[in-house]
Amino acid sequence: MLLQGQTAIITGATRGIGRSIALRFAHEGCNIAFCGRTRSEAMLAVEAELQALGIQARGYAADVADYASAQAFVQAVAADFGRIDILVNNAGITADAAVKRMTETQFDQVVGTNLKSVFCMTKAVQPLLWKQGKGSIINIGSVVGIAGNYNQANYAASKAGIIGFSKSCAKEFAARNIRVNVVCPGFIATEMTDQVPKELLDTWCSRIPMKRPGTTDEVAQVCLFFASDMSSYLTSVVLPVCGGMEDA
Image (cartoon, rainbow, N blue to C red):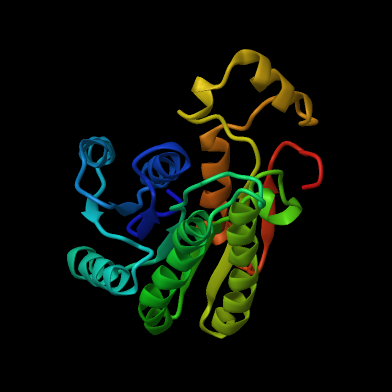
């Protein structure tokens, strides 16, 4: 097993891409700590699903975009699990609008959640990884952060910021064998896309050279690569997972 006995923190793991990452890591022997704003039914369901795979798993109530909350979350995980080896910053939101209609609140909420959470969690976990002399930080960006997108200036700014932040951290942490990489999904099939009308879905897929959306597990497999020693000499990498989507 690629991650046997290791512990990963995964933010935003109660559904979608985050849940798939948690399951993929658990199948490779990794213990999983994840979080949400509350100990919801969805969190408890994922917790049970992971524990059924024979690994240690626990969901925590935490606001990872709040500095103090992120610090307390990481300290609790370190106390409960004994170590932290991997951090996957996956938590994110959207609040789409054209710039001419976008409110300050929409901008602040998206950048605050998507970008500040990456800073808060990286800041909290870095001393532990530094002491261990090894670790992997995987930040979930987006092809929108590379190419931009209509009506998503706030989201694009947050994801582009993650890329710049990650590349800077990669340089700062490399001497202690802490790797920092970015996975940038394109159009991925999730619970939300299940609600999209077929005509619109077909239009979106027509812009993708591979003519289909990606799956959450395809993103999770790339994250597994970056989490494991298969990528032991890779850091500061920005990898689009988008089926060759235009402008990626």
